[in-house]
Length: 252
Image (cartoon, rainbow, N blue to C red):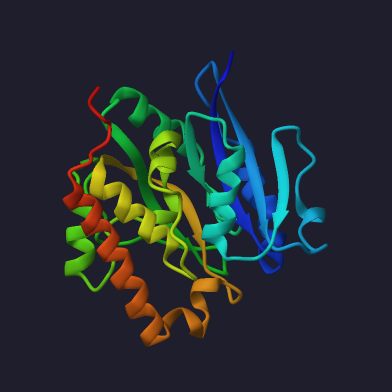
């Protein structure tokens, strides 16, 4: 029986046209013998605009639901995630060759790791890519590392939440993505960091597309009052989790 990685993608109508590229990058992944992936594509809404872009592949499942933002779409998709691991892949992004295998290898080699991230490159409209100068060294990330950096650097995390790969049971224990209009993935990253060790892979694992319709590029995303509220609740949740004493994996 194959062991499974569930790839979760939230999509709305403006980004549906990029699904074919996300799918091509997923189809190109090569996993160790005995492993397989399944792709859950969850529309944030119920339109007729997304379904035509969903690949006809038995490994791909498409569902719709009332709109609530990408965090809600991803979290409700978890109801159908039956793999041991969950990988997030935004509809407008692309995995690099070998990304899934590298994430998997890190967590399979160390049962004490709860999650993994990797280096991310911005994919610009002209097809060029730009990296980040302050990526950490490849290796384990001890609990609290991400929160400390994020709080000390203007709410900028040292690793990118769009590249998250996590154990499904841990993801469910934390309630999935935060119920926020944005920064829901940062909230999850900091929650994971609060209770478990992570891993950072120095080789680029994701191409993060920059385009004019990008949600994080809209004026509402940088509204001062909302951003302050988002950052406050994200930080408060992470600190509450860290202070609870609960850690993953749970001692039995």
